[in-house]
Image (cartoon, rainbow, N blue to C red; front, side, top):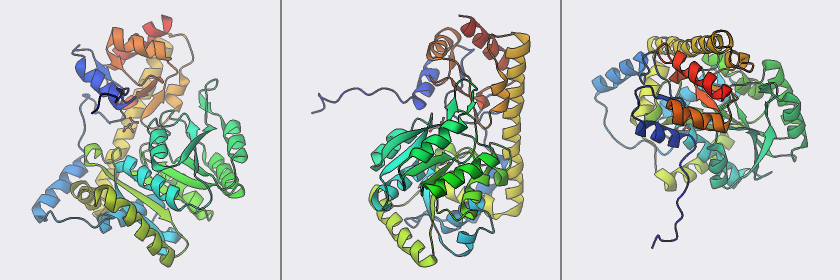
Length: 401
Ligand code: LMR
């Protein structure tokens, strides 16, 4: 029956974890998937999460189904975290929000909703480059995927002129995917003043902004500062779509906790949109899982846990910043590796887009047991005091060829 099914390629990001696991060399390093590691290279369960789980266990909750759009306390707190306590649509009860299977699920529900109900276009513009999964995910949702310029290889920074030109030339009404903060894979974000210009173009061209916010807190260490773009766009009167993930900022990866939301014009409109979100979710997976949403909601609604969580997000962000500084010093000063490495320091969030080419990435995997995605992206969180020198030395050798 399946004789004609062709073998597909491994996933460009999650496939790297498989290759890493198969390598038994003691020096191996996994810099592929964006998952935080502590200074010992171990996955990190946040203290705020452990305490929330203790509270949940003590409360002896049942295992009943959640409603189709999830735990209402969680969705309301997730919206508050993203849009801010004094957001106008939030206070008007005009934000439609559903719990999702993490950020990917949020993007997929959003893509499907837009393909079905957005009246002006079926085309979504995504940055070049973007998170690899955006492309198949939006195609599978029924949207056509096109690209706008984002990263300038020459400056290893933002191609702001190219970005503006491409958005200005996009057809009126098109959907545009914006990484709210800590752009994946480049670690290059627009400045606040550039966001304001982007907001003007989006308004002028009547584009529809769809924000992917998978790293709130990871860019600057502050969840408020990282929500700047989302809140600014809303304050300018844009209606937006938003995908949120709690995988990174609460370390809830495998719990799959996320939210998708849309700002609407009124409470009445929000109710209609809500009803259509339910119609998308119900035949797909019926209703979302319980445990992770309880964890996130417990943290978001308990002032003490919230404060502890904010401290831990900052701690994770700061450890990554230290690794950036150290890696820069090693490449630039200690090994004098050919090339300019200051982008390692200036990029933000979980990743560094090193500029290493595919050949060099392959050599690093085969000769040094160092795994990263083939576009040269490294998850900075995979580096620590014990492996960073070996990593820098291996990069130096790969660059020198
Ligand atoms: C990544 O880009 O590494 C993360 O977003 C994890 C994933 O699912 O790809």
